Length: 130
Image (tube, rainbow, N blue to C red):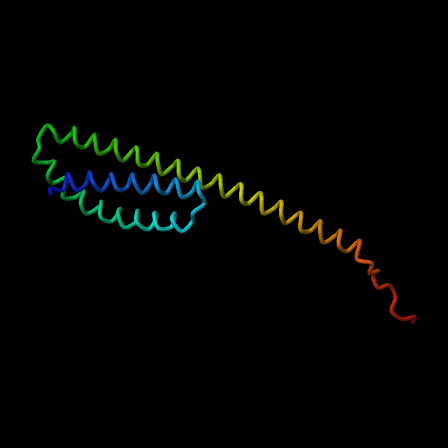
């Protein structure tokens, strides 16, 4: 298998992982999200080394080199957009979760106030006369 073909397959794997990452975010499956992100990190290292070999192959292609580079750049742009979409989705879920936690915190404080008002215990006034 040549480096160009291997690079194409690596980018297809990146797309698959990025899509799985998006599904994991939507499902709030954080363990799957972590696994996808780890696999993407490993894949990025692999892509870096494959890219060097692929560029060497492209130099031998002559005029077709520019076309192949443009195709790869278009693929990279699509993957970046997919990652941006995932990032935006994750940010939205985090904000929603944060708002929900604040709401639950306020409700908990209200319940404690209500519980104190109905508990029948009166606050300690003077414990002794001086």
